Image 1 (cartoon, rainbow, N blue to C red):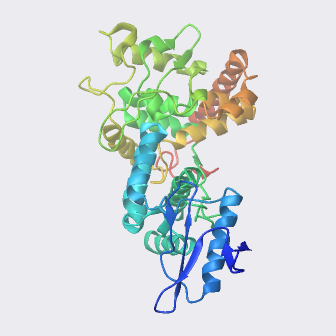
Image 2: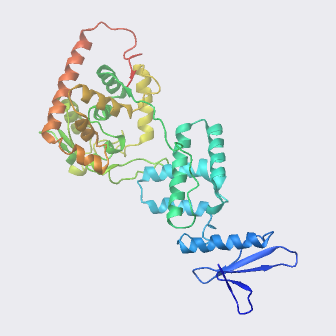
Image 3: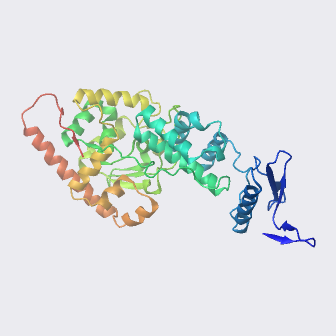
Length: 395
């Protein structure tokens, strides 16, 4: 990297090296942007300074050079901007901000991006596991941190993502619980006439609560016993109703309902759905005509669950898992059940597209036969203790 001058003294081709009066050495170079750069600390020997310059020159040659000041960006500012730019669904944005506030920013708030190193990430994760004792939450937090820093890598603010713990972002989801047909009927009866259809649509739709919250009269076709799901209205922790698209493109679907729900569906339309707004009237509204509220419904659900004798861990969302399982038992293929639930990525939606409306009608008919048979058997059995107690099983 040197060549001789006319006097025979070597001269560097890249950068300069000079010695301080203290005996230590420094170096400098002109970066690709035309800015002169120097190391943060002096070197003990001339050789160390020359090695540093050689490494810089090699990075520039390979086009691997990064502005040393690029990573001097506050993590909190960058992470919050990252969330704002994602354009994710309201519930997902709420989750990201909660994970940042509770689990990530308390550690990394004051640090710049280039100060977050692999050892610091490992220390943070170990502390979170020890403090929260919730591996699923820690896994979600780690995935979020890794995603933010991966974007910082793409933006060339840091050279490499410091989140390198193999398997740290994986979480083992708790297996869903499956209720019996008798238990679903018991829950529908216990929760009351206004909300019993919501229980049945959760199990035999199977529809997400936020999808049901946005169902309107125009979405119901009693002649074909179908419901068209067009949008969703999740309720955030702030109480705001976030109307918008379904969770995925596959969520926009037409569901064929089993025939045994005709009476409940017709009665609900006549008695409880909004009448004055015509086809735009909501299917589910509160006792005083207000919008469906997750918190209010949650209290009614917990009371109904206790009345039936269901385990406290049985969530309303487990009705969807119940619907998946019962559909499969009634003869539906995996493609059929995934289409009914609207649960797929775009790639998966292409795989499931062959399950058309005719096949969905066959699945609904199978459900109808199965539920009627089990209800008949349940009616013939003598009563045994609290209805539905100790029957819920793990899937």
